[in-house]
Amino acid sequence: MSSSDQIKDLIRTGKKEGYILESNLKKCIIHLPKADQEYIRHTIEGFKIQIVESQKDYDELKYLSGPDAIEFLQNLSDGKYKAFKKNEEEN
Image (cartoon, rainbow, N blue to C red):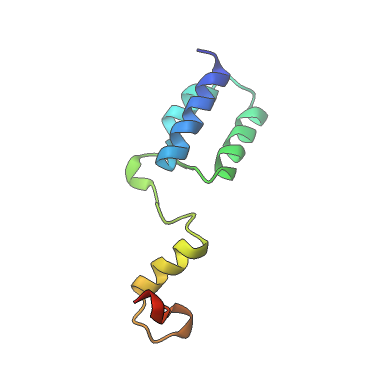
């Protein structure tokens, strides 16, 4: 499998899981020039895929935004703040 195909597979897996292990990424890009390695890392991060040392370092809330973030915060809220009150029709 070509280096390009390995990187594409790694990104596909990262999109599904939310993260890529640093060790797996290094195996795919170690032979590339530093500038290319950095470009690939920035591209992966641009896809909102975390590059982590281990699975336990993955933060599933890191890229949470929009309606999902609001719902998450509403579930944490005690309901005292208007911005975090759920709409009455949702109840």
